[in-house]
Length: 247
Image (cartoon, rainbow, N blue to C red; front, side, top):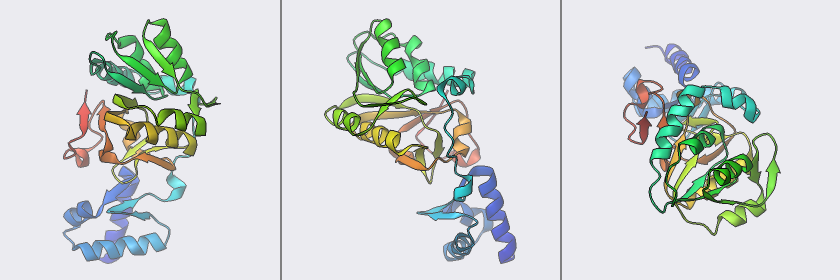
């Protein structure tokens, strides 16, 4: 295959998937690792893609920096989110100490919760209210309130979280990608998500399948850092990943 043709195909794959790995490109084109890396270097210098460890992602112009209001996000992929939330809620066991991240899918978990001996810590004001109204023990961490996501963020929230050690935790994400990991548009929210995840024995990220084709500016965890609960396999390239739970 001509070099120019192969590079065009690489960009076409990125357009479809958002990210590619060197191994994946070697398999698709039957080319050596050095050849693939040269292609990625050339395309990176042209600004056609962003080279990352082990592969490449779409250019910055394709990174999703927009953050929609909670009311709008709640209606996006609602049925899929409910199915994911129902399964996630079933994972909570007696005496679990749970971190519940701000987000629409994590919020959908609350009506399905049945384990009354579990205790919850959250940075979401609406989640804390719902949990308390439903008779659960809940701690709302202190800090700065971010209106768009109804989440508590900032240094005070970070300091509060560092003292906890959770048995399980559940996070939302704006983007999920093998190269970029779990991403969100806001660095302050990413800091809180990352801190809580590092203090959790069994972390889960809840995302409908459309999130796999999106990348936001700030990463808060590597792709393999958590079990991912989703509604369907995003595409065949994810079939070999062991941390996907399809519900």
